[in-house]
Amino acid sequence: MDKEIFLLIDESQYDKNWSMSGKIIYDSSEKIFMVFTASSALNLEYNADAARRMFKRVVTPLNYNEHLKLKYDYSNINLGNSLVSLILNGEEQNAIKYENEMNRDLINNIKYNFNDWDEYLKYGGFPILARKINFRRLSTNIVDMIEKVVNTDMVAIKNFTFENQTNSNRILRYLALQNAGDLSQNNLAKYLKTSQANVKNILDILEKTHLIFSIEAYGTSSKHMKKTKKYYFATSSIRNALSENSGNTINDIKQYEGILLENHVASILFNFTQRGNDCFTLYYDANKKRNVDFILQRDFKNPVPIEVGRGRKDKKQITHAINSYGADYGIIISDTTTNIEKHNNIIYVPPKTFSFL
Image (cartoon, rainbow, N blue to C red; front, top):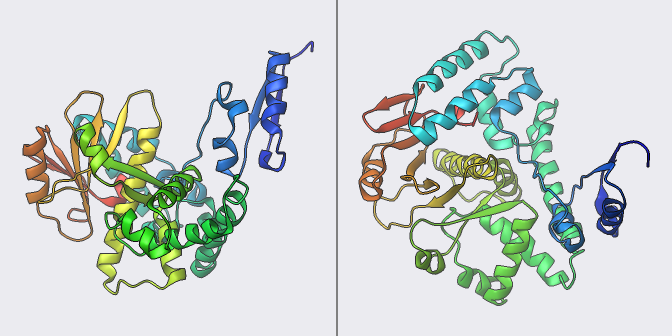
């Protein structure tokens, strides 16, 4: 070839040999820059031909800043950047400045619906919320997307049986109706009448679809091995859609919204650890007494304990975690305050503000 070109291939999963074709072109010419996109994450995850030559970029669910950009053409990227400094260094001044700017801008935006963040928590994460569509239809569309992943994408995997297709749907609904820490692979295996090894295999595949993700217990490597993982959905709207579709068993609205918020914060933090050049890892706190929800670790620096909840949150758990883990400060994400506040070594962040991360 005598000139450079871009080759953009969408829905690449419909060609079973896409990666081999890409490999041949890659080896034949340095003048072709290829981008392969697929609505099936599994198709990109399970491919040995492209693994060594491919740079993967996962398209994560929308944070609140991206949601506002699509729906109201409003963006405050400075708030997201300042939240990074707040979380990693405990520096809250810039975050407070840009939070005030954001709140002022949204108040003056005549198109902004002040129930928008609550709607985003239950139905957001996907661009479809920016369209004019009723919430029941939104949940149905999300459930349809999940069923396509399980019934089409997962079935395409070698040796994935119809029985495991059914088990995958049942596991997702089971996860949607439980607290994040209430998953016992042993009990789940008995419920499904299958082996623990098969349950683990299904969960591993579901993670590769990017419908769910897992985090390990904070501590030594032996604790990682002994303690079960906690599983969360890629966005709280997936959990909400499955709950609505399956029949939500939680009657307390505040408790239910608290569970959704924990999943949402887990999703935001997990996506944060997946980008950037620094090494971040997200854990859950495995202490049996006064445990916080999450611990964020950056390289060899002191951990940052993070507590999440709807309604007023006292500081006993976060104070205990700060002292136990030698943290410099801790973060409470709750509507305890309407704005970012720092009291001694505890930083309070409203959920809507945190969603800009």
